[in-house]
Image (tube, rainbow, N blue to C red; front, side, top):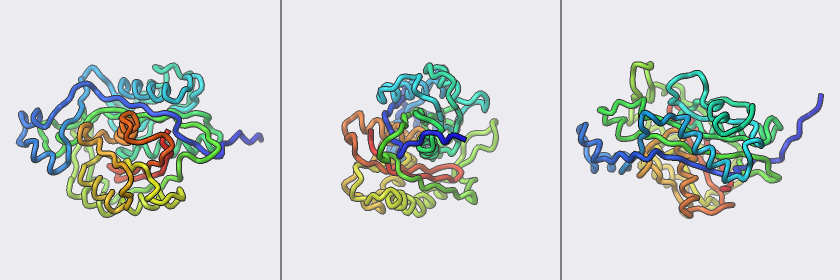
Length: 318
């Protein structure tokens, strides 16, 4: 039996993101439901969000974000041998998004599978990609978080319609002589799984906002600190904190407990809304594009959401 070549570490080689062109403001939503800009901003911190038209699919968004990440990595499609798409909003279960996206990008016969860990999905997929590279199962992995939540939301329900949005973010993971993706800290709270749920395809997404808020603000900061500890990184060394963009109040509550005052905190939710598995790569890619963070800095990623699932890891910004 031949042992496959392994890499000492894995790292992110390139990032990319995509958002639909259509902007929906709080004032737009107020035309169809009992809400207003002040009410929405005070509760979730969102000013606007992007919503894809019927003609733009989840796979379309994933392909664009994946193509940008591939270009940023400097790799050709032929050099990618595994594609993972993290999503919880596919319109149908078969075919999976990963095989479709790989084909559209010209990636020939890669391993291809989807991951559904809801809003923690990108972190789950990133950890899986890093393990595949370090274990010799893959050389280069394209990891995409993509969601079209607009097709699963009741646009007359202000408890969900004001929060969720569409978009995609992607990363290319490859081998490294030194670790660029730290150990993952992941877990779940299945006893609270009904707090965010879709009963069946004839129903929309529903969530118990207060339950999720209490869980996130009391449970997750130890996960973030453990991810730093496992990576051998003190919070004071972080250049950025990129949590799932669930709610601005949740983001700021966790950030205060983290004790990384010098870190740039991702607040992409203000203009992008909650894009579930897409939110972390989308936010990090936009931060890098805007020059808010620099290549080589350390970023703490923290995903959490339906399931209830969570995952965190420290990564080196490409």
